[in-house]
Image (cartoon, rainbow, N blue to C red; front, top):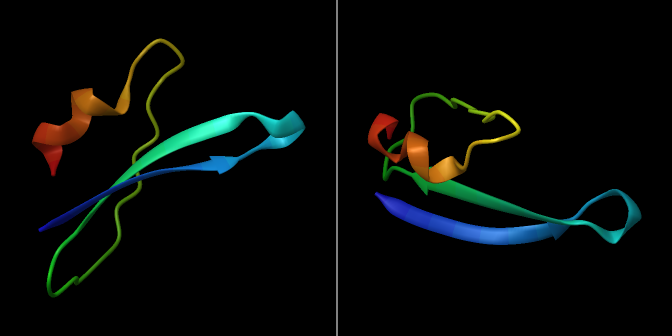
Length: 47
C-alpha cells in the first residue's frame, strides 16, 4: 500500500496537511475527517 502525504492551500492561505493510503487494486474510497483536537495519525490503524 502506498502512503502519500502533502499539503494544499485553503482559505486565507492556510496550509492544510493530508495523508492518503492507496492500495494496488482499490475497490472503494473511504474518507475520514478527524475532530478539531485530534490528528490523522490516530487513524493509521484503520488503514
